[in-house]
Image (cartoon, rainbow, N blue to C red; front, side, top):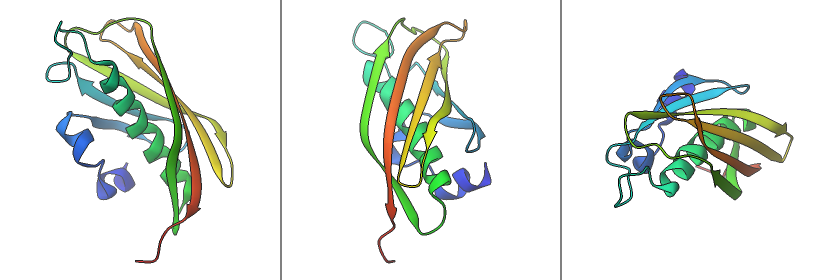
Length: 132
């Protein structure tokens, strides 16, 4: 968790109110408010689910990559199966594959009632970080 706090989540995740609750290679959890992240009809915007998923998956991949390495997203997809209209949603990120040069994570996003609203999958490529 300290690694994630030191690194930061980036301006977009912060603007959307994403907060880490748990952070490790095996499992990462974050929450995001519905308010302020909705589409015109009051539902959580589909893109907001994707931002939550990418924030979790990319951060977890970078933790796995280790010092001197950088994980960058190359593919992301999301399937929305329900809608959140109030409160917060919670994303739980778990690895599907942790390799030397490739990671794949699944992020399950649920509403306050525990109902799955979206399933996000992200693939990251791991490469050497550019020189400082």
